[in-house]
Length: 116
Image 1 (cartoon, one colour):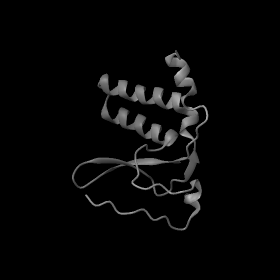
Image 2 (tube, rainbow, N blue to C red):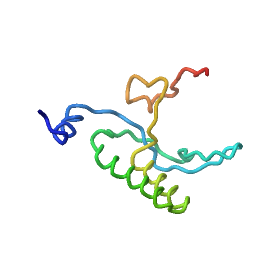
Image 3 (cartoon, rainbow, N blue to C red):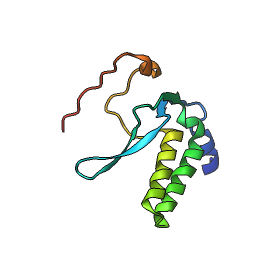
């Protein structure tokens, strides 16, 4: 039987993934009062492989969660989240992924509009 630690060590051993992160992010308030984290207008995109540093990503995310549980001030948590995004990008799902990591060099990238 393979131990949990061995499975975790081998989970991403032969995988890679390209992900985009920007050099700067800022918080923006929407008209409805929702707060969004977005790249700044001057931010420069870069591509990296998050699977190469998945352990540190998980540890950093847990630290931010602990800040919330410890009821740290919102501004302190928002700063930590912004720093996380600069380091790792904004994780999430896209309805369509470009077929190549070089999409950032394209003049235009088209994604289908999602109709809810």
